[in-house]
Figure 1 (cartoon, one colour):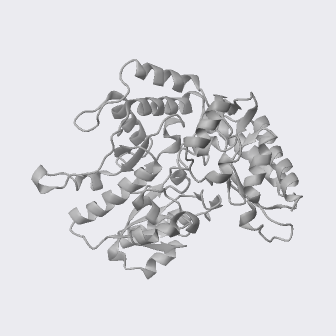
Figure 2 (cartoon, rainbow, N blue to C red):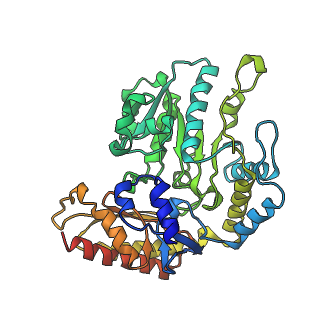
Figure 3 (cartoon, rainbow, N blue to C red):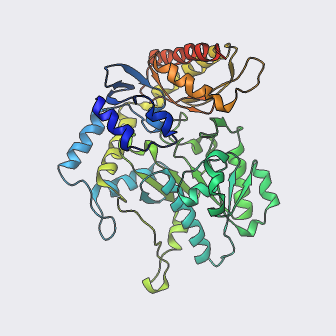
Length: 425
């Protein structure tokens, strides 16, 4: 393993990582997983406290998903979605649409990841208005502290300076708001679409939206005619306690963007869902150039779709959402106890996701240069927990299969790590 670690430090470039610091130490080499637990090259076990960067749903090496991928490998791994189709993709599109009320979200456009799912929705929105005789509708509206991905269009929607400011000169113009009422200040006949992470903003530090905000946003979009894009890359597939976050406020968007948990966290796959009204605007003779000229080499990948089909089956066969409710309650209780720690400034929870923000006992933030959150997560490894922070907010988002006992271990690991790191400040 030392040889592989050396190769990593010599040749790999990791995301969101200061590589000089990374290369100064031997990297953590993860080699095996089972359920909510991961094992490293030294045989040490950890609870996967952030679901392998918010992707894993039912745990690692789930027999049903693993078997579905192997069975599909015995048929074909990938075929072009341009000029042909495949059975898993067709079936998955039908099942995704069936998760919503009839005649609402009826069309599925497959891509590779959350960023491209959002990118597709943005381009569909712009072209829809062109084809509908309203070409002036070109403006996008996004929220403060938003994060929607790192491709050019999706990054334009982002409102986190660290990630987005240095590329500001290359952005698509976006109006930024903090409340649906702010839409009244914008020219409604110029807005193509409003984009939001429903219920909770992940990369902003697990910031939970006030109850009812999503419903008010839907109503404001209806008033102005703007399209509503919901980015459920983080919140989709049970994370909030329901299959999708929009169900909590009975909101149906014009576009729904899915990725991360779509395949159970096994393979890259994304979906942009929309309705028949938008889809029909793109229909016509080839010479009319109404075609949506956008796509990816691995669109509708058969292996990814097979994994996603198996993941949806697991939800039904194992009563995942029903069994999740007492775990959500358990997390709430554990977080309530954790609040008593003098260094825990606030805990924020949405379903089976939480953010634990640490500050000094007087409420003052630690200097961001101190990497307090990062050091807490590194310390938590010694107590059997793997997770990552958003600055000084520790994210706790384990797979949905995590037991209440494992959840208690995870929170205790955070408590011990906070005491060790913050006690030195």
